[in-house]
Length: 507
Ligand code: GLC
Ligand code: CA
Image (tube, rainbow, N blue to C red; front, side, top):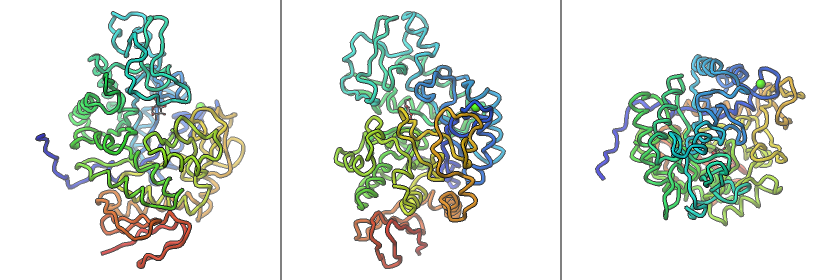
């Protein structure tokens, strides 16, 4: 291979040092008293994000959708769902965010559409028409036996029968989400058109949802195939040529080596979520041993120039365990899933604070890791106030309940009865009033991270301490130490209490 690695540029790109915040439109703020959060509500809360120190907002799908997968089932990529507002509201949100120095990245679900999408309706009715090949049709529902069923709570197969076309269609997720056919050149053209449309509206980047699954091939299955990586290179080439400041993030929940593939030589995506390290952090906290975290990071070599990890603790999905070894999965279930209703597919649909039993020391430890590990930190809305969950709700809605702004019935989220119940117990207002709250702690950590750009940019260098519970590493001139154990440890330069942590300046 003769690909040359691009030279390290002097000025880091904006995303390398940014702090991200994921807010679900329907759960953040309702502006018109229908119980559903909306874009205008979100606009009214941008000042809060600015106060917190957020640089970039990640907005999951707000497109027209039957909402059978919380909007990841897109019926029209060019329309805002009327529940959330209008195109004018979206334009105003982008402008209002930019006015506060906050960028906006949105989700792009390219692997599949809703079965309500006009392409699918045309494809099923007219196999030889212009949309006939837009989806993956077949007569054999046993084809691709290597391909696992991801939503195994609800689906038994990746194929569903269509009575109209009298054929099966392939779906990686819900059966109402048919997979687009990337062997069809028109599908590529549609994707490029969608990207241009939103970029021209001023969007600063995209999260490529479920991106490993674009292609499937007999004998090898359907994850991270060379064809998929090649398509990503084409997306990147378009973005580099026309929107050079934009960010592309991959949602690729894959083993470490395959995860690395999404960066390529710096010619695929700019950022990949660090799915390998996330469960390792929770496993370390459960076992009191840092060994697994060192191991995972060992398998993730330094990134090509211009690339960055996206580090996260929680998001809108279950805490995914598909890629961890079975023994780790069992440890995780035992530690974090006392009630089986919290299980979603192979993972655990719980929020950060309840996962760690509401223990402030563990919460601060996990946030310290989020802000000091190599990568750009992503905060999931509500986790900065240690919001709770409702595991009685279906699918992953346990972790998607309304943001709690104030005490009281509507929690400052809505004056109407909310579409999804409010968990309660804490609020932004209550924590803003208290200097030693989690909210102030997180805000302070964001400020500290910004004061130490090396936490965003310097290489990660593991440091052995000889104490199994301790995870230590250097980032530039900072030594970051984390104690996963319930016993205090004396490390010489610093003493750490149970679940203690420190960022120590070194020579
Ligand atoms: C991604 C999303 C998830 C969604 C799935 C199918 O994994 O994060 O929420 O259900 O894609 O669209
Ligand atoms: Ca509303």
